[in-house]
Amino acid sequence: QVQVVESGGGLVQPGGSLRLSCAASGEIHSIGDMAWYRQAPEKERELVARMTSSGRTDYAVFADGRFRISRNNNKNSVFLEMNNLEVEDTAVYYCLVDTYYAAVWQVHWGRGTQVTVSS
Figure (spheres, rainbow, N blue to C red):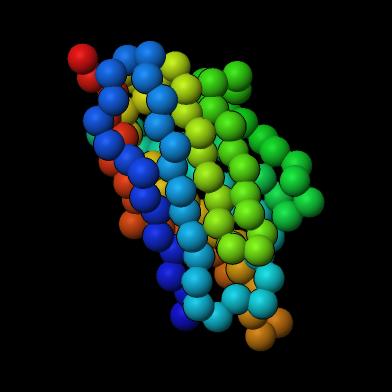
């Protein structure tokens, strides 16, 4: 089994910053893509940013220039630095990890961390 745990969410004022962390543990031989998604109330879950094992990144339009994804392959971790936060960024942020073990690739989700942007 694989566990994926996010941390770092909280309440921040508009214009502020937060850094989210996500760590995967358990039966992992290697990790492929790592990504952050978010889901606001009554909205679909959407991609925020994704990073491949080779370091290629993709960002949603709303995240480009404000958010930065990074990862530590030695610690099976991925991070999301969010700057200049807006009220519209309020959502539960989920970590996705693509793991390889026993000849099988599987996608694992964390339970999410709440980010609230409000004055």
